[in-house]
Length: 452
Image: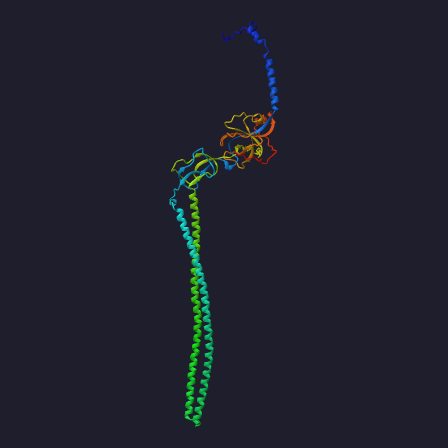
């Protein structure tokens, strides 16, 4: 019955019962105090145990060499898939054919495209040779015209010199005829004067008059010859000018034809270079009909799978995982922890799916973690607002398991200073970062590349 009345209940005496005597006669508080004393003593000692400060992060397994990471094979030209030569999971060596593609652009449909382009190239080369021959012929013609002009000019100048001499000769004859006519005129006048005085006969007067007529005729002839000689000089000079004009015209036309031939030759040479470039491009494009493996590895996935499926240039066709790689772990750290990470310092790695017992502050007693060293630190923050850090296997520690696949997750622990456990608890409770310190070796370690 419950004691809920206001009346005072009588005191219950447990000593009258055997169970009460057995329970309340034992001193439990003494044992509990001993337990607390031992517990706090152990806790006090535990506070002075060493604890390795660390920075944890999440990442994934990758490769140490950039060219050994998973890659996709693209086609530099658009096309259509015609035939596959591999299956997913197959191993291919560098240069092995993966698939065959065909053209989808109409300008490359001609099966004789290379042959016809080569014929066009040979025709243009023939045109270049023809223009070279024409240039040589025009240059020879130009030289011949120059020589002929010199010859004609020399002939005309010689003729001019002769006519000048003729003019001088005729001028002397003309002056002599003029003198003879003057003398004959004087003699006739003298004979007429004597005839009037009766000292000369009529026959003698007529002889002097006839002599005057002869000298006048010679004078007129000499004057005509002199004028003709001067005309010959003018004609000779005009002939020189005509020759100069004629050969200037011929030389100008020949030089114009030579310049045109050179221009056509340069144009043909340009066409040859253009066709050579086009032929080289067509040849390279024809070699792209077969997509080959850029390096040895395993076929991961056929991204474009169907026969007859078209794709654009740069589209991903197949994914390849290279072989002979060395594993690494790509992890990310917070900006507040970034100053504590240095190249060459040690870290521990725990792989997803791999059994592990981890004590982050006691790496020596952890099981299932593997040693690593920092080999690269990103200088610019990533899109996830964290800094990327690359870890490689530590050659001084046991090797990483070969069964771990590229792309699997990993948990990383960067090891820092050794401090007491009590100090670490105090730091964690106050939210302080680990102590800044400078590792002994800051140089990048030389890690051997493991070849499987």
